Image 1 (cartoon, rainbow, N blue to C red):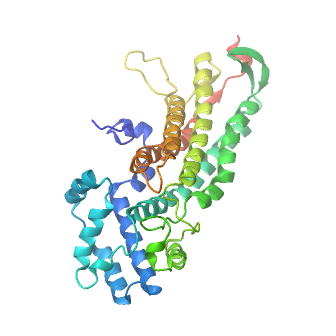
Image 2: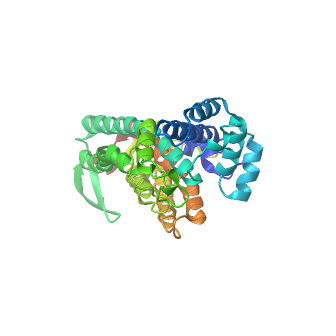
Image 3: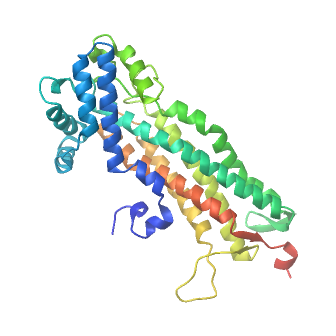
Length: 355
């Protein structure tokens, strides 16, 4: 048994997402943090903040470094963040005379946040591919079955006859909007974090902005011009984008589940029952509803994590770690289910459902 349904041995197959889970794995997090430390050392060496020999030694050490994970866990329980122990171990690996140049001028949040955005950025092409796949699936459904006459339903009551294309168009709209805004949202949200201990870049000897520009280029990120240690609206915006998408797909799921109840759609490959062999349950549609509602609860937590005290808040930061990864995984899982359910349904003409 696991605490999270997303990585549960069998619930994970329903609710989880392999590509999203890989990005948020401990292995990928460590790799990303070491990549940031290596890039930081290289950038600092290039602009003269640390010796060139130190930069090269740190880069080489990061490439081969394998930390003591038990020590990382114990220290995180004490320090509230993994970076102090990671840096201690990395300094020992680099050794004298360059070990003390590891992490020069930076703070834990610079490393954790930058490592996070570099990993989330890896999901942008995944989102793009899946959004296209869902749009194609819904487009094919509309082209093939859009002329079918179905019963419109308003306020849970029969309304007037309409074409299935009208209902499908309502499913297409949030997917198209998400696709249109994905890249711009990623550019605004997924940016470099570099501020040093107090967030003003003063720990970099007057070269903070030059260092940020150099480091950002190395990591293929934008430099926002200032640290965002305690101003989290960028990540909240990305979470909002994911939640709106997941909620839109949840509406699609809710419609299909209701139509399955009334016989307005047939399912080609629904789920079975342990006691009623005649049943063909709308599992994928129901999962879309669950994921949409889950995303709404997570985005509320993400907004709570905006309330930071002064220049850094361990409480708000920790809450963000707890809610952002499952929110994004839920949105990826929803896209996967939406594509399959669009290919699974067959609209039943209104005259058949009404005898």
